[in-house]
Image 1 (cartoon, rainbow, N blue to C red):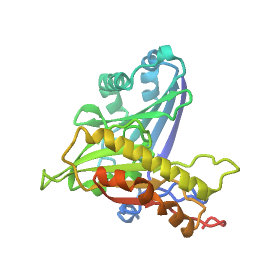
Image 2 (image 1 turned 90 degrees about the horizontal axis):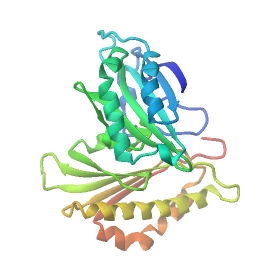
Image 3 (image 1 turned 180 degrees about the vertical axis):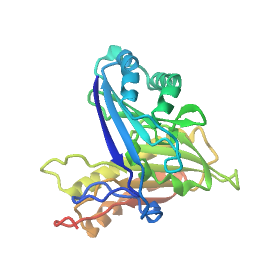
Length: 300
């Protein structure tokens, strides 16, 4: 078992970075609220295990590494977080994702008293398979029972705010899981008008390391075109479950800033309707947004 813990003061908003990295959500105005008040200290622990048996044997030790929690007026809610990575490199140690989910829920609920004693508010399990992007399950305590936060399945909890699910507060949303890991689909039903049913699609784009021969503008064109195709494929699958949806909406958010100019962005987006217009119309997509933060060669 590998274990690391760290104390961290919660900022009122996500910190800015000197170099161009992840963006904040422009619709999240929480940084304007109580910005002058001190924030509680959160302690986090991260551990990795080679298989599920090692996880069961070492889970208590990881939790006990966190400080004991006493509820107070200053800290009314449990502040601490736990991140568990499973190195599933052998097929014999792997299971289906649904089986893993049930295993994590069973483990967390079996240890609820221990988790409460150490002020754990969230446990994130990460499945690390060879040649694949990690698969995430995030579990929280809801009125004494640990349940999965399905709305942010398969996304790093630190990035979940970029889905901007708060914008969907007028709807009751149900996650629809897709094979494409970058694509998050939500079936929405109007709170005041249950007949208003639509899909909201969120996609977070992580550029990764670009080949030396590829310009950023070329990546923008190829990646957005590929992603739109993946979104429409996934939307076509889930549309068979909900046939009364209309006015569906797509949102793509480039997580990292891109060193391109606005003309290159227009060029990248210009051919979308020509290439995908018929499918967009057939799948009742009436709105789309692509969020990109541009930077120049000086990082501004």
